[in-house]
Amino acid sequence: MTQIFTVAQTDPVAGVLSFIAIVWILAIIASIFWLWALVDALTNEPTANDKLLWFLVIFLLHFVGAIIYVAVRRGHRTQAKA
Image (cartoon, rainbow, N blue to C red; front, side):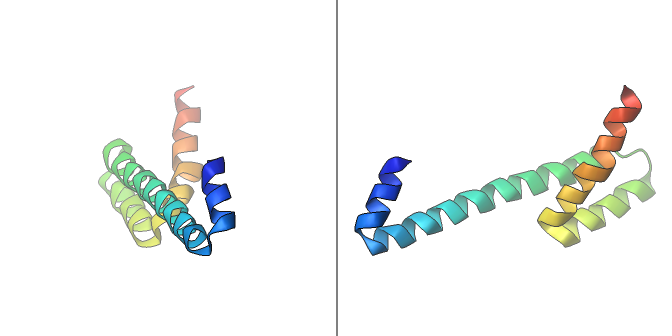
């Protein structure tokens, strides 16, 4: 990781490419999280109405919807199991 920063300081083009690579990596991680939340909502929600509601929230709000789902619904489910 320090090599990326060293190259970024010496060559401005490499700095831009490093920034783009970091943004791509974060976007891939966010998309994997979004997909996991979408699958989790469709497989673990008890009723069809809940599945449809959470599908629409996660699908239309993308990353923010996935965070809302994990914070609200998944946390509620884990407390109910305990």
